[in-house]
Length: 479
Image (cartoon, rainbow, N blue to C red; front, side, top):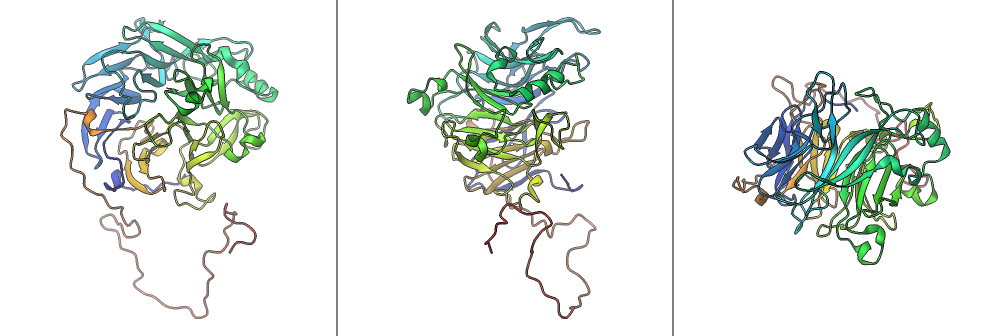
C-alpha cells in the first residue's frame, strides 16, 4: 500500500444527519484506552490500560488488561482481564488460568487472554438495544492460550486456543480446547501435511506453532434459525474464527462439537460465489434487535493465510491463500448468500487496480449499528469509519497515535450510546465536511494550476481507455 507522508488525523468526516452518533472507544497505540466523541475530541483516557480489545460497559466501565506477559516467554499473552471504573479503579479481575514461572519474573497467575471476550447480558460486546452487558455480576467468556502437544496436528509444540467461561468470582466453569477438535475442521491431506511440517511456528516465547490463531469469539444469542428449529444455532452456542486457517465455526456449547463451519477450503461449488475468505477477523452473528439480525458479519482481511497446495505465492503451501485487499461481508449463514458487502468497489476504487486502498491484512473489525450503518475498523492504518447501507461515508477518524513500530494500528473499535457514559454531558454534534484534497496544501506549498499554458493542436482523447491490468467490470460487449 502506498501512503502519503502528510495526511490529516483525527476526525475527518462527520454527517450528523446520517451517522449513528455516540462515543467510540479504541486502544490508542502506546497510550491506553481512549474514548472519543464524533468530532474526535478525546473525552476520557484510561492511561496505560491495555486493550486486546477495550470494550465499554454501561456506567462508564471499561474492560482491558493491565499487563502483557514478557514476549521472551509468551506470545500475545495478556496477564489478566480487568474491569475498571471511570476513575481507573479495578472492580473485577480474572487471572487464575495458569500459574506462570518465567525466568527473571516473580511467579504469578495469568489469564493468558488474547483477542476477545464477552460479558454475559450481551452476545457480541457492542451495543445491542435491550441487551446490556452486566457490570456487577455475571459470567465472562474469555479466549486464552494454552501450550499443548497433539501428534495428529504436528510433532512440534503447539500454541492452542482455548475458550473459558468464568463466573464473577473467577472460577472456570466451562472450557473448550481447539486442538481436541482437529478431526472436525475439514483439512484435506495436503493441508494436514503442511501443518504437520510447520504449524505456523512463531519465534516468540516457547517457539510454538500458532496453528489456528483464533481472534474472535461471540455468543450467538436469540436468532431466527433457532426459532425455526435449527439446533445448530442455539442461543448459547459460540462462534469463532481462526485467522491462520480461514475457518469460521460454530460450536455446540453443551457438547463442544463443531456444528456449522465455513472454510478452510472455499473451492467447492457452493462456496465459489463467496470468493476466498482469508485471514478474517471479528466473525459474529448480528444480534437480534439490529438490522441484519442473524446474518454473519465478518471483516475478510485478505492478506495471506491457510494451509494447502503450494503455489507461486506459497512455495511450501503455508499461507497459500493470498489477496491484496479487504472486504466486509454480511452472509446469510443458511443460504450463504451475500446480503451486503463493502469492498474496494463499494468504497469507490477501481478494482482490482486500486483495491489495495481498502486493505488491512491483519487486525480490524465491523460493528452493525442500530440505524443500519456499519462501523468499520481498518486497523492496519488506524482508520475507523462509518458507512451507510448505501456505502456512503458518514464518519471517519484516523488515529494520530503511533507505536514503536511506527504504525498507528487500531485493533478494534466500538461505538456506544452517549447514555452509557453518565459522567459526561452529551456533546454538541457539529458536521465535518470532507476536505477537497485536490486543493488542500500545507503551509508554503503552491496551489494547483499552471502559471503558463499552451494548447497543442491536434490532440484528442477518448477518456481513460484501458489500463495495463483488466478491471473487474471489463467485459466483452460493454461500452
